[in-house]
Figure 1: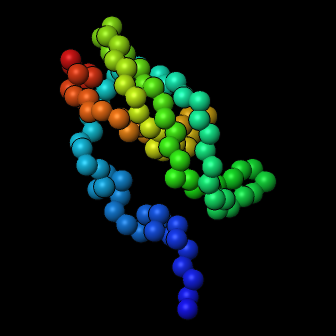
Figure 2: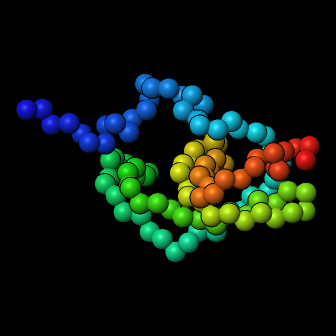
Figure 3: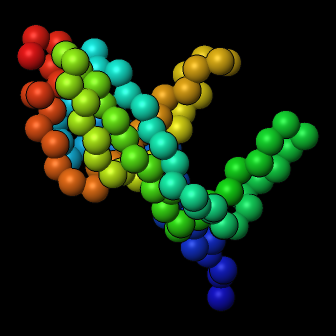
Amino acid sequence: MTSRDPLSSLDRSSGPTAADRRRNPRRATPAEVSIDFEGSSLQGAGRNISDSGLYFVTSDELKVHVTIEHNGQKTQVPARLVRIDDVTPSTWGVALKFDQSLDPRNFDRDS
């Protein structure tokens, strides 16, 4: 019997791109965004470690409160942090999933 890594199904490197997996279209926005973290911690299974970092997987959610400021209006919504990407050595991209739907047209460049 061959043992299979139960987390191997999380590897999407040979599957559809992120844009292909998206359920909702994206829109550009000039809005300013801030997030506050709720008091939480994450626990999970280590996948690999080096002298400069660690990668692990978890089923825990990291809940946040998001404030989106656009045209002098502030909108607050609860969300979950779902991904952080290395964009440059000093910049990160942060992906959040809202706990409630928002109309993204309210945050367009022209609105």
